[in-house]
Amino acid sequence: MSKGELLELLKGLNEGGGCLSSEELKDIFKKYATLLPEGVTYKGIDGELCVRSLVPLALNGLSLGLSAYTVSKYLNWKDFEVLVKHYLELSGYEAVRSVRLKNRRYEIDVLATDSIRGLGLAIDCKHWSPGYSKRGKLGAVAELHRSKVELLASECNKHLTSIPGLRGCKWLLPVVVTLTGSVRGYFRGSFIVPVESLRDFIVRLDFYVDLLSGDEGMVLNPCFSEG
Image (cartoon, rainbow, N blue to C red; front, side, top):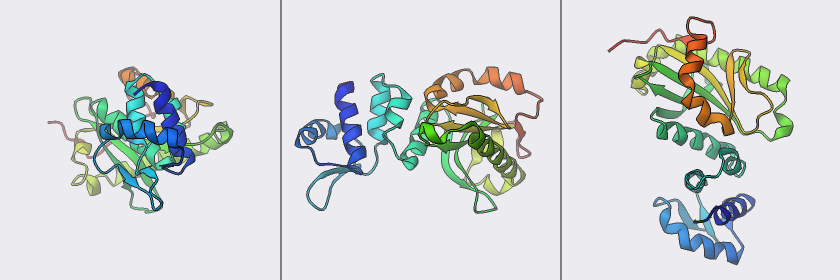
C-alpha cells in the first residue's frame, strides 16, 4: 500500500464514520483488506465497506514512514488511545488501557510497564485539535493527571492482580500524550508529549528519568518489589 492510498483511506473512513462511500476508495480498500486483522472489516447496513477500528491502518501508515501526527489526526479519541498502547507495546512495554481508580470518575487511559527499567508510564491521551490545546487548559490537565497517578500509587495493591507488571516499577511517570504540540516537556507535574514526539520521548526516556531521579517529578510506587 502506498502512503497516498493509505492516507486517502484514512481520510475517507474518518469522514464516513468508519465506512466508505466512494467507489474509488472501495476498490483501494478491497485490495488491501486482506492485510487487516480478522474481524476488523464488515459490511454496513447498505452494503458499504466499514472497519471497526482505524488503528491497523494507522499502524501500517507508521510502518510506511508516515508521521504519528499525520495518521493520528484521522482517529477518534478511542482509537488514539489504542494507537498509543500499540506503539508502547512495539517499544517493549506491557500496556493496558482504561485503568479505573478507586474514585471511579478517574482512570488512567494507558498504563505501560517496563520491569527491566523499573518504570511505569501512566498516560492520559488528549486527542484535541490545535485550538483546544491551550497552555492554561493543558496545565489544568497536567495537574489533574498528576493527582490521578498519585492516587494510582496509593492504591497500587488493588491493581497488582490485573497488572502484575506494576510490581516491577519503582517509579511512575505521569505523561499526557497530545495530538498537537503547543506545549511540550515537563509541565505542572506531568510530561506533555505531542504524539509526533512520542518515539523520541521513549528512546530518550533514560535521560528524562536521570533528570528527575530523586526529584518530585516522578511518583514513587509503594508496591515496587525487586526481583
